[in-house]
Amino acid sequence: MVREALAALLGLEEDLDVVAQVARGDEVVAAAEAHGVEVALLDIEMPGLTGIEAAARLRAELPKVKIVVLTTFGRPGYLRRAMEAGADAFLVKDAPASQLADAVRRVLRGERVIDPTLAAAALAEGANPLTSRERDVLAAAADGSANAEISARLHLSEGTVRNYLSAAIQKTGARNRTEAVRIALEKGWL
Image 1 (tube, rainbow, N blue to C red):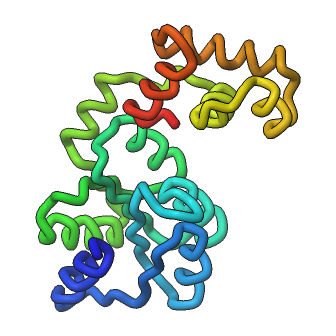
Image 2 (image 1 turned 90 degrees about the vertical axis):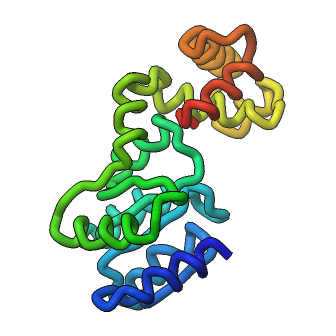
């Protein structure tokens, strides 16, 4: 519903045409390629692939396509991860439609567009303290899986899983893995 509303609003702009819409992150690259997309608007929360994962694939496979990531969740960690994935813009969904249209025009001119409140929060927050592997293990623990299950899924020893979880707990300042997962999710680190 939100996707269709945004498409309708952008379609009202004289100089912008909405050429494709997809509901899943794993459909983004194929649709962008099939329709000659110049700018892709991606939601953080998408089935199949997240908007950040879809942005990374889009950047790798169609590097000329500009990427605007939209979120309901103004988490500084999401901003950092989106920029690392190759996003050209990062905006909150509740911004006025005129700001979104302006952001699309600006990224087409080669500018980066970042919601100023999120940019300030990201600077204040600092970088994600978790390594890539710590994030993988912590994300695998999010569903309550035991160390043995996580080690089998990620092809790591149980001791390595314990070490990564311990490091993640320490770096997040949590008391246990459940709290570490919650903190990492709240900050947009996972």
